[in-house]
Image (cartoon, rainbow, N blue to C red; front, side, top):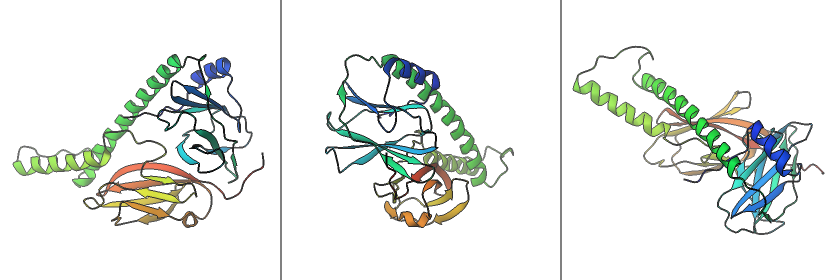
Length: 277
């Protein structure tokens, strides 16, 4: 499985800043490291940055598509590695959204061939952080599974169940299988693979196996105020118009599969207004 590593750790960022001197937003540094494209930048905006997306295209002025969004866009030093670019001379640019709803599109550029910087130690450190995040996620999944099993069995979380009968064992096995399937074994990534924004800032919903599973999605504001719920999703693909959310900004969502929490994540809707650089 391909892993996309985001540069989020202050100690690592300090090393990058002092050694490599990446550009300051809205400019960015772009390097080709043996076929992997590294996008690096400094964020010195005094205003709150709510979202940064990395976009690429074969053309320098049009047909850009977003390939990733940064989980912590406010970080002073940040970056992204495109591990599998379709072409090593693609054009890249950044979409930068602010808490006011306005946004900036950076100039597009092609990566420079990089033969001077060795990212090996940096990637090792990022991998270590990634593995620690996986451990934290697995602990969270374990807690969710225990709570889901208790809810499914309609029992208090700390109560005990009589064991030994064939019926009780069969029921327990069925519940555990359903919960395991719903919680997944892989890490939930940001941006979500199931609910995300397209180039027009409409919301795309892609769900697996809707014919054999019961899905629902709850949407919330950034302050967790309920907006609306989609029930009985029978198709694999939906597009929700951005006007349904009222304004630009961050939105949260919860996906339930067979009445068990399947994913919780967020997305950003940018305002249709461009800020002059």
